[in-house]
Length: 425
Image 1: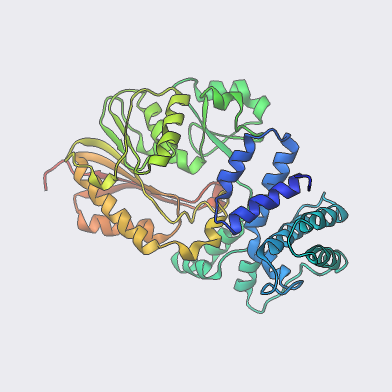
Image 2: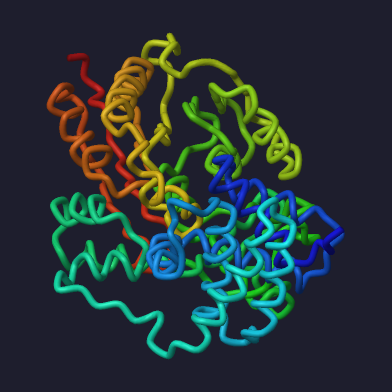
């Protein structure tokens, strides 16, 4: 029976991602709860994320070694992760990569697979220019080197131009920051920074209560005690721009996993009346866990389709963090760029439109609406809002920003704040 080394466990996770369509962030989160040592966990994280992020490039190289039509997918995955280690993980020795890959291959049903793996990796290690590629088309070469879908690149280029599209492609391979929000209901941000700066290597982010750590904070005492919530800086800005006032009626229409909802609660100083809604029963427990951990008491949770809210002119502030394509979170969820063809953006745009109409119906005259998405797809962002205000001329944009992840190593986000006229139209 094979020893389940860090490489073997990484390969198992990658098989689940590529063959069973499971999500790497969930699988890796489960790994954090295991008894593995920190060094092994970090290695597995790096190997899994790196292989997924560079999958298109690695697949192109693998096809120089084998006939992909005649070899099982689990072998191809094994070669992808081996090539990733050789090319991107400088400190890892070639012989160690080869030896462990061969041992993993010996567990396959086909007896000749181990020999194929051994010969393939030896060829890679003895071919100096193996990883060099050159296309006549510079844009296609850019996309292949950065494992970015060419059709998606063309869409982004059409929306924002070549310069921004190029930066987005290159940024998709960057390592995201360890970003979090200080829970100001328990401790002031400046006090937290002074107290924990050295222990976690803290620096300031682009949001008022947002900080960045250089050391792991998952399952740390500051997380378990509810002093912080893990949240991207751009996501924190949503609550900051919403700026809800204490003792007002506030609705978060699509709340999971609860980061923005609990931020609203903190900004309202834990006063009534804040409603957090989520359509997914499965995700409700994530929200409840975050609320309990952060010690917030003013949130009323509802589990329903947000389009069914029927409280006409009731809410002073509504946050619609809408379901979207997720094209702004490539760094954190690299599977999105691999599976972008299966994302039905037309249906998403229609759903967002319906949710905006519901928000408008439930918003008080004089009230404010925050619309946000973690995408850079213009149809779901500025174009969506333009269509909305064309339909509702009593809605006025008072803040609008498209955030690109390459600017401050954040997620890509669209944030728009609108105000409803206090005059009855």
